[in-house]
Amino acid sequence: MRIARSLQQLQGLRLLRGSWQPARVLQPDPHSPSAARSTPQHRGFHSSPAFAKDPRVPERFVSEDDKKRPKSLVLHDNLFEQIAMGPKSKATFTKVIDVFNKRDIRRRGHVEFIYAALKKMPEFGVERDLSVYNKLLDVFPKEVFVPTNFIQRMFNHYPRQQECGIELLEQMENYGIMPNVETKVLLVQIFGEKSHPMRKYQRIMYWFPKFKHSNPFPIPRHLPEDPVDLARLSLTRIANDLDAKVTVHQLPCTEVTETGEEVHLPYILGIQSPSQRELLAKHNPSRPLFVEGPFPLWLRSTCVHYYILRADPPLPEEKVEEPYDPERSFYYPLQLDFSLDRDFWDEEDFDVEDLDEGPVFAMCMTSQGDQTTLGQWISDLQLNNPILGRVPTLFRLDPGPQHLQRGDEEESDHGHQLHEESDKDDPQPGEDTETVLEEEPRRSTVKQ
Image 1 (cartoon, rainbow, N blue to C red):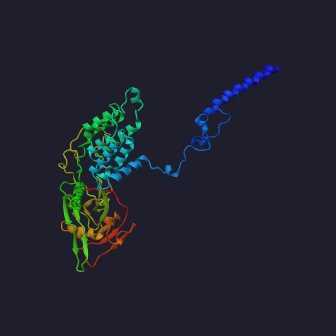
Image 2: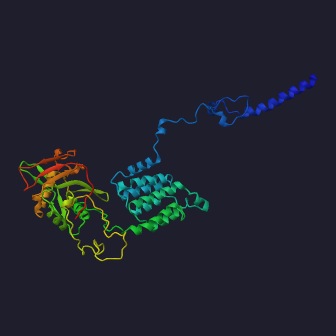
């Protein structure tokens, strides 16, 4: 029994010795740098590298600089700023696109670059250039995002890239740019014929020709740079009568006084139609007139301001119904003289909405909307409208933009009170000047 037990112990020692030898071979060198980062092996068993690391020590320390790392869109914005050091133009913008295309043949980060380019286009003045939009579309890799089966088309293949393409087409739509055949070819090469950007292109090509000439009063693509010409164009658009005449009361100039001081005189342009002149001649002299403004008028991205000369609505006892002129309008007659077979519930009168707005007798535009400048406009109107010398004129002026208010600060009070004052040094014949400041009313129209 003792001999058998001794043989089993010797055999067990041999087995332990055999298993210990390969474990010593598999252990790393204790003097190597990898062994210094790992914990000591226990019982001589080989462990994987995942368990050799100390779980208490992170693999990578996250610093504050990594948290504040700028996004890729900001990096592309910096690319535009670095390359476009000189004047920002179309040549500089296309140069930035070429630099990005040559950086990486796989066009990494092309989505962020296109978003940054779309945001920078107004700064470079290329937001209405079709060739630049096609060049941005050419940044997309070709034949990579095209779905190859119906499942990919159904699950919106590469949605992030398709949304970027739709955003580019929407910006073209907002600026009124119609795509061409090159745009269609690029979209087919990039996203395929059954993609969302291609459907967006088809919708634009369907609706744009329908609404291209729908505006009967189109605005010129390039507005006049001269403020006098711009004011003449604006007043012509506001006037509701083709017979209205624009009068230049004063051109901008600079005068030198006796003391050597330079005085800049603003421009004053007014417009009045013959019907407005006739309506003003019938105005009751005992009821005052009002000069109100400024009212904004947007011409594309340019905002101008105008002033009006108006009166309060006539009292009910002062209203005089004049007979309709049958030849005033052949398309929309104001009165029907023939009788038809009508039932008892049919109404014979027209449903006309009565507005409580007073008539507008004249309009003007000026670069300096103070009371002195507008008073000069009223005095010039007396040449063709003598009744203005017998009617009191009140001023209701809002502060408006800063470039329109260059007069005394006392004239731009924010209250809603009426101040009556008479200028005895330079009186107007039968004219009383009053100032009223109130909220800016809506645009008025001529009511006859």
